[in-house]
Image 1 (cartoon, rainbow, N blue to C red):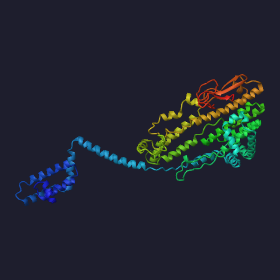
Image 2 (image 1 turned 90 degrees about the vertical axis):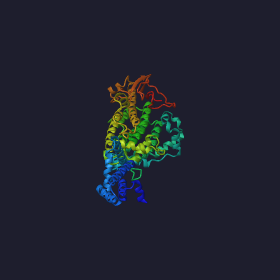
Image 3 (image 1 turned 180 degrees about the vertical axis):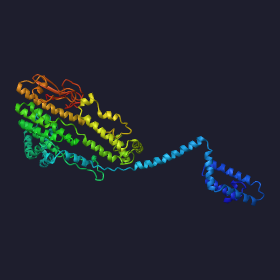
Image 4 (image 1 turned 135 degrees about the vertical axis):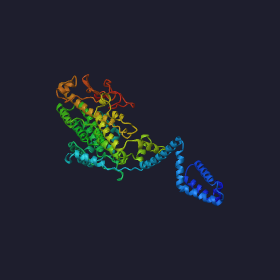
Length: 559
């Protein structure tokens, strides 16, 4: 049946010729149209060659000779296929080449995609050890305040329910209570005094620690051991929150009992504790705790100076001690710890080795993009893998990204040393100028630094509260000795009541000072960078903010 079918396709050619033609057509592996043309050509060739044969035997013999002349069917099919391809029109040949190239690119892209998606991190640097080594190298064991602070926390007697109730009802309004001691009942004062007495030993350890001037403690990971990232480590706030709670009520009680010199000296202890946590090796949360201790101490010192119960010599003693704490200038916010956290994140986000030093890991990139599009807790959209794949493939490699990250943090460090006025008015933003030179599509990881400008501004603000406190004490000394306040702040520096003028971080001038009806007014022009005449402007909730977005920051008079 097969022979009959083949014969039907090739006319009355001998079976051997039909089989040969069928074999060639099968091996040619080309388009159907071309196979039909080749079949017709071979059929015509055999038919012409066999036309003068007299009988079937001659036809059979002649056909066999022709087949032997053609040679191997597979080779013949290959030659025919090549010949047909060469005879195609140029546009067809070009289209075929394009198609072949496209197929090759698709295969290569698929292989590259599989390699890209399967990439894994190989973090080699234990940045936790780097952070701890920074602290150890910066602080010698005998100069480290941490053992004393830790012991103070262990000795601290926690407040009972009555003290906690006092804190809940009055704690948030501590500054108001400074001037309204009747806000606390006599019974509450007694309870408070007993609790403060119970914590005398803890307080003495805090005092001893504050005299060390430096502070460092070992940090540890909190996540799983196989997934050790700096984002998973916790900075212990204990015992500083509890000690702060005790310290501020200790100062308040001394003020309420008119023990002004003791209260002022305890404020100095709080400032010293703050200074010990403001080293370059300390992390941002340490600096935040320092600001918490400092702020309450400065405000209490201003209140104490305003009550005019300290002698001139006592005021000078407090001012001299306060000046010694920051005799090297007020420290800036340290950027080393967030930089190290950024570098640690990148060694977990990138693979190691290969083109560019490594590429972004696909799974991490999806999570990054979800955070960027504000959908961290939502189900991953269907299109996100494709977006992540494209974004990852065009992003700069590991080496370039690390180089740009280091340069970015250098710019951030330089920028945050500037005052807000210098950053906004004089020289602009180092960070934004640097980022403007980097194409976002290639460096979008570098374009996402944490925004620490508010914290940097807070450091300038608390530094200015320190300068204002020094100035107010100097003015009170001057008034006590000379009967009136000076006409300007320059007189304070000329007669050595101050070493230098208190420069306003929100202008290019000193704090605004003027005499008013036997008193004085001292203020910063504030965050809007303009002098509003030294008046408070309440916020939207009707409260007076220390550093409001509009209006001035008033250091004196205090309400």
